[in-house]
Amino acid sequence: MPSQRKVAATHAIEIDLAHELGLRLKQSYELLSKQVGGYDNLGFTKQDHKNYLRTKRQKDMEYGEAASLGEYFSRQFKENPSYYFATQVDCEELITNIFWADARMIIDYSHFGDVITFDTTYSTNRDARPLGVFLGLNHHRETVVFGDQDATMSAAIKVVMPKTYHALCSWHMWQNAEKHLGHLLKNESQFNNDFLACIYEYDGEDEFLTAWNEMLDKYDIHENKWLIDLFKLKEKWAQAYVKRTFTAGMKTTQLSESFNADLKDCLRTNLIIVDFLTHFERVVNQKRDKELEVEYNSRQKFPRLKLKSSPMLKQTEVEEVMEFSILERNVSQTHSYVVGVFNQYGKYEVMWNPLDETLSCSCRKFESFGVLCRHGLKVLDVLDIKLILNRYITKRWRRDAKDGSGKNCTTHNI
Image 1 (cartoon, rainbow, N blue to C red):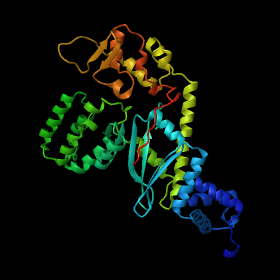
Image 2 (tube, helix red, strand yellow):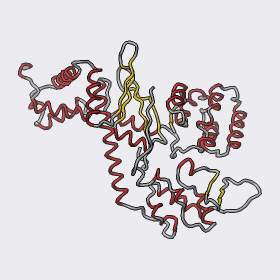
Image 3 (cartoon, rainbow, N blue to C red):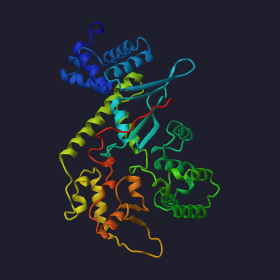
């Protein structure tokens, strides 16, 4: 009988917990039924379960969504005064935008804010409110601003982050290429390879410009407006220019898209904003727990040397590098190189200054990634320099990257 059905207090607690963990109503209801030996023993139906959640949501929203949001942020700030949040309202005093960052996010940004991705392609609910997440890459590579070819975003970055280098996501570029150059991508056209080569393969500016013009001639696409506009932004996507800036090896917003996939599992169109924030907090905590596990393992274990005889890899400072495997691979590949003085430029040119003991390579691997390239390591080997100078062991990739204070984080009014 409907009058006899009731969600018991103990079940209510479990329903609330399942909801906070992001379980869907069907999953939550099935879990409760198994605990009591079947649906018949629950004492309420799935509709009662749904009604309970709706009533609870209405009670939580008694003073409106804005008030609930304010209460949530106030509670977070009370727990940690370093918690930061800001809201933007329209002419009718309705909230249009929200920005927030907890203390851990601010600290992480101070250490690893040199390379971040920003993506707003994931809409969270029925009101089409987009979620924009700033994601960075720590010294474990567990999960510059990388975005798509958006004029509004580019203009905003110039105002809010005037000293930031804004690179274009190569994946978004390819998606746009399919829209504007679809006829050239059909039937296994060679254009695909030529276009990708212009993005990734040419380290020298002259090489890139020559290849770009040859591609335009080959496919008679000099008048294509999208390519004309894209070329104007070449400093934001072509390897010949992007390699001049530290990007930690990132070329796409894949970090953001991976994070959005994790959010999609727990976000639904019927979530109110406070529920969304609660679920978002849970996903972030899961990421942090994984990072803590990796951090613990890295401090308990030192890398196993594959090249037992290499003194470069036996330095204490080198063993502290989280990107040790990449460095070791670069050292191993030095055996495949021949160093000499040529009358013309080879593929890469390495310069060594013995006066100030500085090394530079035209591939710019150290400048863009923070780890010495195989070409530079080969030259050091030929010069009988068996230790890597400390200046080329960047703290960015060390185990102790988060020890000490990070950079000051300045705020901007947006």
